Length: 57
Image 1: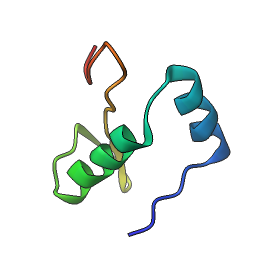
Image 2: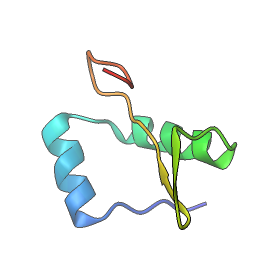
Image 3: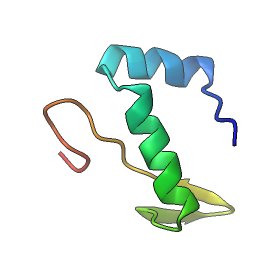
């Protein structure tokens, strides 16, 4: 599967120092059906670990 980042997401991940590996892990969890929240309309919430803070911090 190919994963694309929008310009805004790229800017945010660079500013927050989130690695591409963390984003890929979040996508992998979503593919396995492990999601943090279903917002409806096919939109899900998936938390991504930030350096030194974890996923839910």
